[in-house]
Image (cartoon, rainbow, N blue to C red; front, side):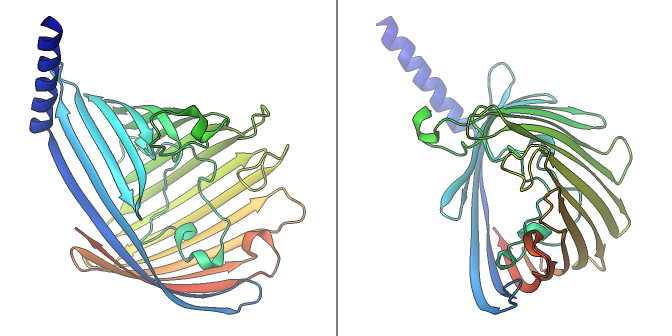
Length: 331
């Protein structure tokens, strides 16, 4: 009888929590009309239409001890892109999940953009540049974030760097054996209005369990004054030439800068440039630039983005350019 009463009480408690929890659903649909040429041959790739869907679910409730519990899950392009449970008390946030980016932990961007960052613009160009290629952001992590008057500090640990978003009830065999990863990051204004600073350090084991690891250092800053925002960022990954595979003495250095001008409440213009350097004697520097014009219609945004790459992926004279027209509607 006591066991039954305890079970009933627990079920009632869970029911009450579910009833009193705050639940929200939001989403967006992004439609892209893209046209470009194959770098090197400059063969026209034609024009195509693409879609990106995102539906975000979140719910929160407070425990009897005052701790707020926030649960979130995103459905992106018909698959779960991230999911997490957060335990928040004051300025402190302890979480377990995938694709969580507390305090811009090792995945932050300080370069302002109107639409997509330069590495996320027309994928037909195959740009190798990435501002945070060795991030553990997409892995299943255990993390902690604390807020201070000058910014937020985060730490995270990924037991398996190749594990992300698994829904297999903690079956270790599904992800296979891989190395682990750790990261620490800072994101804040240092008490200066308009300033944004990010800094992070990541150590990531290779997935082959050979005790080899690469480490990434990110540092960047942005500043807003009036209707102009400028920013720059540099990411350096040691002991690799492609950002992922171990190469003793190698280096993958990604540098980017940009500016966004808000011409009006509705119209913004942005320019971004990026350079990728490695210590591979065969490869040359990859240089990419992008110009974007955006028009805000309220709930919808229309952008036109031109991207040009020289020496794509470090191959000399492998040049190309592309154009994208994008409409994004939030709901």
